[in-house]
Length: 127
Image 1: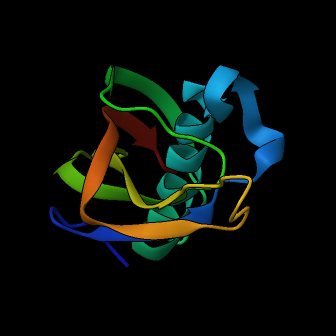
Image 2: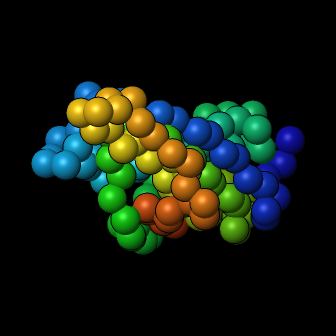
């Protein structure tokens, strides 16, 4: 197993209402960063046979809100491979948005195209 530039991992998650911290059912940015940790771990396992350690973020940009009731897709892609480090590019897209109303409390719809909510660059280290 070896890390290669272009290796990509994607995970989807439903954003539970317990994650809403702000008016309008907004979710804090830390929710997306936790998902980035999950996709980074999976990527390290697939490429290096080890969970690895997250060393740092070099950039994080919050571009659009994430709300409770959304379905999000977190992705990590290897953009640089060092001897023990891997630089990763992360994205978090909202692929479906909950639109609960009193008349239709479970209403939701897929977004086409998906909405880019967060992007980041980070470094992981493997043994």
